[in-house]
Length: 135
Image (cartoon, rainbow, N blue to C red; front, side, top):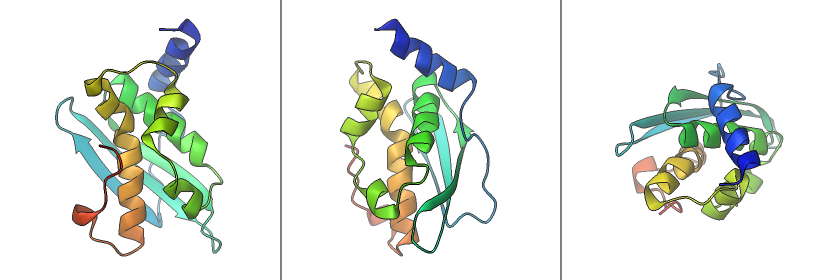
């Protein structure tokens, strides 16, 4: 594993960015990875143009899921709802910059899955029936 990526992941794990609950969030959703015990909730406030004004996350998890959530919240700052909808597993893998085993991939994409659930819920969908692009 390239050390610069490893150091970045460890830094985001130890000192996560946007690790907070956003009061009165427009989008809020949480989910768990039962295999590893990761538990992530994302909070997003958007403006009238559906652009991110404030983002935060809370939860517990392994270094990969926590770092991924931290990095994802940085990535989506000032994105629009439509831009966030276009994010994929490949974006997460590229953001982390390390090879991931299938088990670690589930940890890495949990924050994206949570973001997709938050968007689906915000748009009035039944989260249980949302199209999961993370598999």
